[in-house]
Every structure is written in C-alpha cells, then in structure tokens.
Image (tube, rainbow, N blue to C red; front, side):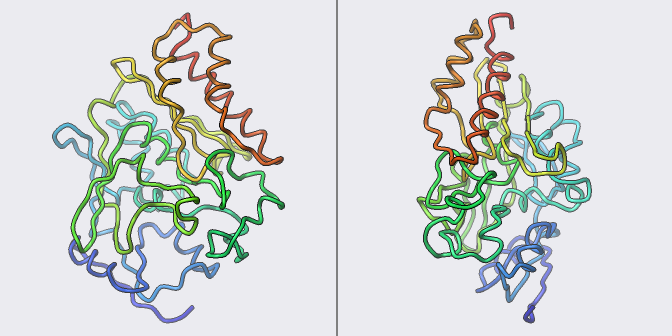
Length: 321
C-alpha cells in the first residue's frame, strides 16, 4: 500500500473539493472500498471520508421522503416510516449482507459499490479492467447476467438500488461544479455504454441524498431475494414489486444484468388491470423475459426470475385478488 492522505471534511463543499483532486476516492462505510483496495483494484492518493459531510437523516421534504446518503443500512431497514411506507426499500436494506455489514455500510456506498465478478476482482484482463472480452463467457459464469449483457457480463450488486428504481426515486448528486438530480432508473448504464464503470457519474461526483416521491409511498410493496446460501449473500435474482395506491405496478429485477432491470411497462399495465388467470400470468412472466440471453450456466436465473414475477403478478393482478 502506497502512502495516502486521509481527510474527513465536515461540510459538503469541502468534501466535493477534496473529491475533485486526482486519484481521490470517497469513503462511506468502507465495506466495498477496503476489499477493492486490498485486491489492488484501487490505489488512491486521497481518501475522503464522507460520513460527516453527507446527511444521514430521514425526513419528509415537500412531496418526497429524503434519505441522506450517509445513512446506515441498518437504520434504514428498521426505520418505522420506511418500513410502513416504502417497504420494498426497507426490506432491500435488510437483505444486504450481514448485520455487521449493514451496521457499517451507508446508502450512498451501497448504491455505488462495484460488481463482485471474480475475474475482474482477481485482476484478469477483461472489458471492465480496460481490456477486451469477458472471461466468464467461456469460464465459470453461474452468477453472471442474463439481460443487457456484453461485453461485460457482471451483474449489479446493490439490493437497495433495485427497490429505489421501482419506487421512481431520484438521486441528488453533487460535485465541485454544482448539484444535479438523476432518476435512479437513469443512474446506471450498461457495459455496452462503458464497461469500466457502472454509475453514470463524472469524476468527483457523489450521491448526497435519495428522494422517494410521495406518490410512490404506501400501497403494496415487497422485495424478494433469492440467494445461494439463503442469507448473507448477494442476489442470484431479486424482485422489487410495488403496487401504488392508484393501482399502478412497478416490477424491477436485480441480479440479472448490469443495472436494475425494469419489466416492460406494457406488462406492468396488464398486471395492474387485474383479473388475470394463471395462464395469463404465466404468459406475461414468459413475455417479460423474452429478451433474456443466458449463458449455459445462468439459464436457471430465467426460471428463478419467472417464478418471482409469477408470484408478484398473482398478488397484484390475479383474478382472486
């Protein structure tokens, strides 16, 4: 480890100024940064601790619930307002890692964590490391993507991000140049756009807070996560399912692609219309995954995703609802 400078600004302006320096990195809970540092995937000259510069509060401002990026996942998972009004998000926070990781991890850090692809993290040359191709295609790939894949087949790792996309949340992003608002559905790109990064953030930008619109609160919400070990693991497949009080439906899958993957809006509309029998629901779930392109070892993810969608569609649009 080469020498580095550690700074802990108390004000946002000081934090973004420090992040504007070359070879600087943001530190939240450190649950992703420190392992990447240990593996040689980053070598910062300046580490900017954001835990005092960014808000950690949960509040209602205007027509939105505002969640500070420095809020700990453990806090978010148990917050009474989020549990009752944004259940999919609270459940997603509760599904992250272990109790210790949730106690340390921050919302902003979790949303911007890097993929867990073992080829990239082991230093193999690949599209994500600046090379070409993806070793997973011809190697072990049972945890990799089934939609929007290539040239990198790694999947997005954040649970809360999946729920926030389903809740039409907006990320407030700051830098030394100012502040901008980005819908969570637009925050992440595909590897075809740029395989070396996941979030559409410029150098020096940081998430300050996330806003969930009041219109998306309440209704019926759930976050379901399928894991290999049953607990304390990343999602093989997950689903954030939200039915608003006006009946509109949002279905967003995680663990299947380079970003949270929302089901086609026409399918959501069919589910929201209600009165669907089992055959219709099966057909809709099949149609939702029509564009899936699994590798041989990830075909099971299509089956898992279909099962999660069928269960949500029956709850929201079944004939006996």
